[in-house]
Amino acid sequence: MTSPGGIESRDGDAVPASVRVAAAWSWRLLLIAAAVAGLVWLLAQLKTIAVPVAVALLVTILLRPMRRMLENVGVPRGAATALSILSFIAFVVGLVVLAGSQIVTGFQDLWDQATQGFQEFLDWLSTGPLGIDSQQLSDYTNQVQDLFASQSSNLISGALGAASTVGHVLVGFIIAIFCTIFFLQDGRSIWAWIVNLLPLPARENVHQAGRRGLVTLSSYVRTQILVALVDGIGIGIGAAFFVPSLALPIGTLVFVGSFIPILGAIVTGAIATAVVLVAQGWVAALIMLGIVLLVQQLESHILLPLLMGHAVSLHPVAVIIVVASGTLVAGLIGALFAVPLAAVLNTVVQYLHGHDKFPELGTEDHVPLLRREALAELPGTLLWSNRGNRDTSEGRDDAGPGPGAAGP
Image 1: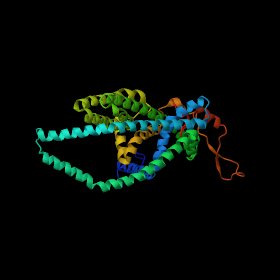
Image 2: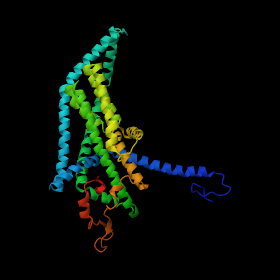
Image 3: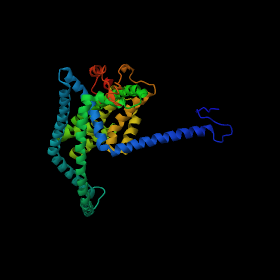
């Protein structure tokens, strides 16, 4: 006799069928959870490599249209790849240098204003309705200064630890550049090699699911860049009315922070409001808060629904949970990559379960297969047979570090 859960039951068995079904599900779920935990632990141990590779993947998706455009005007593949990467690096370095110079020139004025505001606050505590004795305030200030002085050894050890972090960042930067070059130059070949590591019956499904995952990731990257740009420009223009010398650094901070969905915009908006509060007082801070809320409402109710569409179909509640989970597991890095990872997994899993979010992509694009050459020449060796596929792969969409023909 077979139970509704597909588990055989015997007459006289004292364990109900529902309990046996629950047990069967439980050990499978525990096994899956253990595998996921092991993968997360492995990525945490290899974060110096895993994070740069993930960054290289996102940068590749961002630069692929530029590389294609250069190729269309006759620039060779290698030169187009190099020009795309160099242009991106020049843009980032120029933005950092410009924002840094603005911070240097405007920070001293902001510090003086903050010091003056703090002194006015202390005066209000002593002369206002609270009537705190000035000597007590002085004692509290001295205690805070002594606390900072006692932590100087921790600051020094933190600085020494930062030197190691700088080394890791440098290694990560080199890995990211190296991977971006090859992802742009030969991404489809890399994807074909990865897919061919799988069993033969699974290759086609994985390839088609990967193509759709790449479309989702591309949509996410483009949308987030546009949304972050709107946030940065809008809040930066608002800050220019109150702190002109710090408008560019505030806009840059908001632009970068907006890549963490929802939480990033809230935190950077709060920082912009706090800066205006220190510089211009409560009235200006309330106006700045109104500007921040207006920009964020524009983003939430117009830009995201219009631009993201069905490509990244994650409910806002799911986004918040995913970002919070990524932050708890991997800190800032987890917050940055949690949403794109969840969006890609959502698309891939749905396709593997029979729901194609992008039927317009079709299934005509096939990954090149590995085949055995003559055993007399290369005994036991698997070689990638590029015949009949090379022209097709180069002519369609070959640049992505994954399924090349997945681009929209």
